[in-house]
Length: 331
Image 1 (cartoon, rainbow, N blue to C red):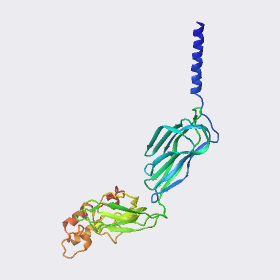
Image 2 (image 1 turned 45 degrees about the horizontal axis):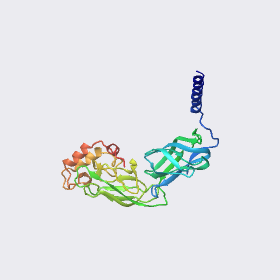
Image 3 (image 1 turned 120 degrees about the vertical axis):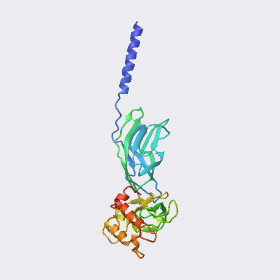
Image 4 (image 1 turned 180 degrees about the vertical axis):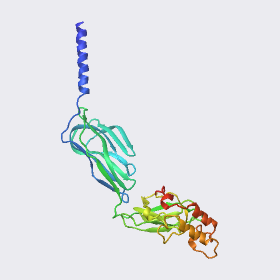
């Protein structure tokens, strides 16, 4: 009976002890901090398109592992690779997740001594996808000490700028598919890229060809940001004022397909001429129908005469503006 009593006492002490350790507060480390370096970081789309950003720790005391989570804008950049920094050694990772916009690394040392001081925890290699600025945000920066107790040092989020270096001019290409309402021939549509926003090249203007598929091919244009516009007589055009921009990367630059709508017969010399199909277009085409010698802009479909087919395009698209017609066309 006496032996049973002492056995029960020991079990109770063990249970109480387990509760004590389970609810032991997180270790505090005065002066410890976590941050990104460099901050802000910059990578150039027209350069090597790569930037290493270190996750740094400063003022650490007897740390043994970490569980770090962070987020960023996956439309602007991605993390191409992750490497261990020099602060820890002999690391084994329980979890490694590298998804667009999210990274988690949970790792611990295996047979090394606890680490103190300053150093790089992880080295993240970012690659640029599009021009812009993204925050690199810690959603968790949890470390553990030599007793496996959690340590939560304060952290500072970072910034990554994805840009074009004005000192570097690298050539690239741009293709696309353009066609004209009411015409079989897809050639001759003037397409313009404005002066480059950062490296100062351009503007570039080339006509489309009549081949099937992609019939627009800019070659040897500088990697940069451009405003796209068209200048087809008799049609609603993409005007520079619409601000349709495209950022050209090293490869794979393709404009979305575009079908220009006809009927904009008075397309020069009028306040709304290149943006709207209105009564001025109706008046010009209807006044030129059947004439042997006619104003060329009235022949919308370019078949050598002004007839009911030209007027039908004007009537069918009457009231349309470029903004309405091409509202969903975004390079």
